[in-house]
Length: 374
Image: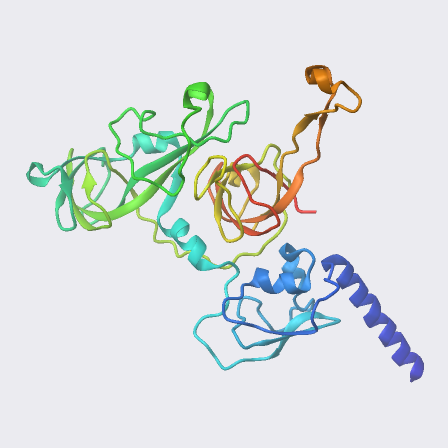
């Protein structure tokens, strides 16, 4: 009997050691934790793991009963040799804790899309508003061209472009205003990206278009087909004008469940394209801020893909070996990249993704590089 108990204990210890080695538990990881309002799955995992993006590995390795996406404030979590599981349930509540803070990402799930420049140019557009009015509000008719194939009562989203993201062979991270790049007279709505356009002339049209961001500003339904078609503006959060575009309504429910994981194949030359609060010497981001990345589904990136963010190391003159009085002749040394934090992708397009900065020890800036987390 004693031998059997010893064998069983040894087996449990081996299993726990293998589990702990893979997940890399924090030295100060608690044995139990009471879930708090405002927690996310990432923040809970960060209490137990050195690598929070591996949180799926911390849940009960047998995956017998509990769903980590059904954890509620007040639940008691317990860590044992099988991993992390729910030891005590709180009274039933309406909403479980989310993977990510939904308030930070919801506008980017609902209000913004990224399309190709060709898709935008080929999309139907408002040519005029009823009674010759310069702008339309809810309940007014719009006259729309290029709406071939539409049927009466078909619904559309009314959108307006905000930005175009470009990447040159010099890897410029600068997003460019779309106003002068479209052949049609398209008005812009200010987006969340306060880009700096001082370098537009430097890069010009030599840059590769990653995608065009548009904002949904209303919905409409077809009253009468033709060219132009008559469309009723059913709702709008700003005045609609000539040049606004129509795209199919996206009624697909958003999946707020995200499984963080390293990229299967870390894309080369992946970096932060734009920040929510601007692009200048003082514009930086931190945890729970949204950033734009220059990689998407075509590069194997999907929802939950987690990158480590690094500030590129500077190239400095080695004046110790060289001559401080004639620095231009001193040998040059590139310093190592400096780790800043982690970003998790929550919405992907062909060549662009939206990501949320999950944690960090330094501010994130445009041009910071993305690597597989280590």
